[in-house]
Amino acid sequence: MSETQKKRGELIVLSGPSGVGKSTVIAELLSSRPDIHFSVSFTTRAPRVGEQDGVNYNFVSREEFERMIRDGELLEYAEYVGNYYGTSLKVIQEQLDRGVDVLLDIEVQGAAHVKEKCPEAVLIFLIPPSIEELSRRLRGRNTDDEEAIARRLVQAGEECRECPRYDYLVVNDTVVDAARQIQAILEAERCRTPKRLHLVEGFASAEP
Ligand code: 5GP
Image (cartoon, rainbow, N blue to C red; front, side):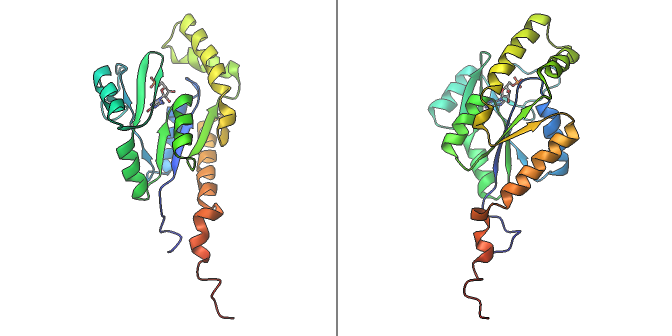
């Protein structure tokens, strides 16, 4: 098997507190790695202005989401700020089986479930350069009032406490650097010895 013939895709999980800039970093990453499949989650929350069904999320009712849980259709799910969010098992499996790398943008509970079910998944946590900078970015979005911002900052602190469970920590100082570091992580993961032993299969029997 040649180096370009991959066995299975990588499952990549990206988490980080609200306002850290995950979506922008993901967009930057996908612009240089369009071969990565971005997993569109299912959610019961209402679409925000500009969000499209099937693009940003698959927007479903609570009843439909609970049916998906009962029927085992989700790789993971979590309840976050009163709404369900979950990842389709079938879509992820199909892509990984085809050798396609899959990227999940999910919160910390979901990421922990993924690591339990798929220990080989690569977990990356994105942090802001400082809590002051996060606060500045949240205010800059102009989407929340002061009370909501304060709540998000407390939540950000709680989420960041989960970061030791992750394999990698990336600081989103500039979007380009953060995306470049994630690409470097994925490249290093691809070079892990267990994933490359097929490259030396014929070497042991080689004649001098
Ligand atoms: P938002 O409502 O701001 O789009 O997302 C809220 C949080 O839900 C974010 O931290 C996002 O990463 C997370 N999230 C989005 N999709 C999923 C999912 O499928 N599963 C889990 N566990 N979290 C998700």
